[in-house]
Length: 490
Image (cartoon, rainbow, N blue to C red; front, side, top):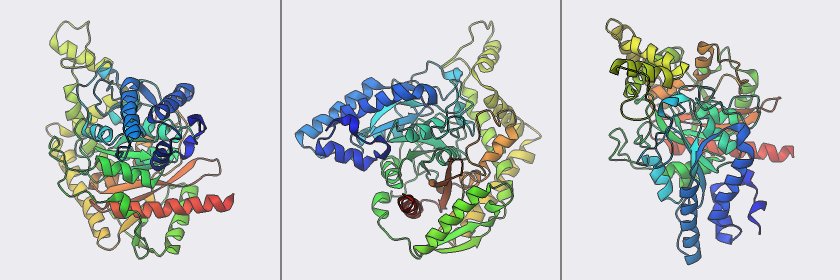
């Protein structure tokens, strides 16, 4: 069988393994097939910033040699994967979507990247993103915006827009993204793929170019919930290189998908269904809840009373941490250096002015203000106190329910350029995602339908700290429901 007749749209991790085991294809042919698709279609979408062809083909050749010997294959053997460009990958560019890191090539791999390759994944290259992961549309990248493969006049979401678009366009079977306030879940919803926000500390942040250290998390974007569980199984766990990574044992996420969901208690936070929610998204989520009832879940309303404070709390804490983290980019150690500067202070100013984009500068200024003498107590300390209240809201809710079901975004994917001139409206795109980020709990975005215009709709499922297993079980129930509806429509 010729490799080029493989159905790339339905090429999951399991399907790739079956094709390799049956001799329908080889790992090198599978990698070449994806590179051919990237070459022919990604010029328009702009999801990849750099390709690591030599490293990928060397890994693919190693997998083919294992196949030839009949050796047992690791869980991601031969699977083509893309990496968001805020994660270090030895020898490949790591720009974080910014001019200030143009030309920087880290001498090491991020832990999550190293774990993927150790599990047999073929690393295709680095994916476009909002600069330093700051954005909700992937229009803030210094290397041009990413387009949504489902509607080329629309944004793919951000900041992991390149990661979501690459999966949706079948340029990769899976990708890694990062989520600070919704940056995996929102693009997953906009592009119609699965995106997982692991519990804070579940996946190592070593090798991640930091935006906000108490919020940043690494997670997978995939075509199916099972694929997301498989990737998470590989990258989760304690890492001695990251003091914030948890020592809690990693559950069997893939095996847990076989457990039934009947009897699980599903909470519906009333604060997430008020004014501003697109009626088509609300209708789709009502359908999800009806489907969960049919499979035996108990659906009940819950309240998260401090939700209205989530956006201002997030944008104080995140910008304050960004102000601190981005102070290291000064032209001295790596990346861009302004050549025309005659003094050290001038070099700092000119390098940062030329290297940072408008949104990054805006957030640095906001964060520096919030941390400055006279304003620290009024803004940053107060935001941390409210963060505690938001976390308590979730803990109270999870004492009564197993998961929460809510929208991911208030609207479907919006048009390119529609909100770039109004930062406040752009920030409000995160209204349903930032609370989970602040609380440190886990969440997943699962496709649950589409609008009349054909734009994807995602539903958000959240669970308590380190309970990804329950979250993924419910997500798979939703996914199964969607497949059944599509089949009946056909």
